[in-house]
Image (cartoon, rainbow, N blue to C red):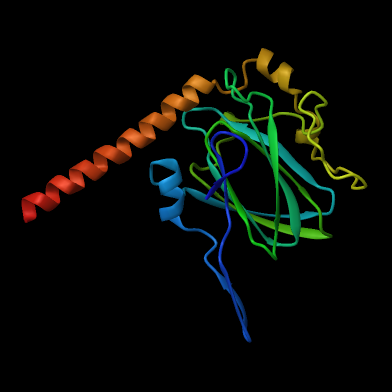
Length: 214
């Protein structure tokens, strides 16, 4: 796992094995992700989206707590995956980072609770799988307009953006901030500390039980 350029976001590069039959890879390794995060991530829901060229989905984020962490990979085609720091009070507030995901290199992106997420389909059709830490809850879900000039995401030139009605009607970042929709950096940090503390307590309890059995 390598940092993606936004605090709380990581890029996973798998090792791909080739032979006469084709290719094999491990697209998700909980141990490596846990080592980076300091806790064992939970998978509560898996989503699959199929998008035609130019479709932008996002910028989406959820209330924290509990938020919704995501592990994203492109299993067919290619996308530009974008992480946006929408956490009010974050040193990186308003910054974004982009990672090219496709069915050749097979990179994946993890983004922590409180970060905004969007992607654009670059191929004629792109299939994206994302593992989510919580189930979809529409009352906790929010969005920021993906073409907000103040965020300034450098979407690929020559690709006409296609937005859903919901994403096209999403507020710009500062409007969302004024409306109180954005998560607070302090709340995200506290929730992350809770997850790490719970993991540490669980490991300590497991160690105690092992010593008792010894």
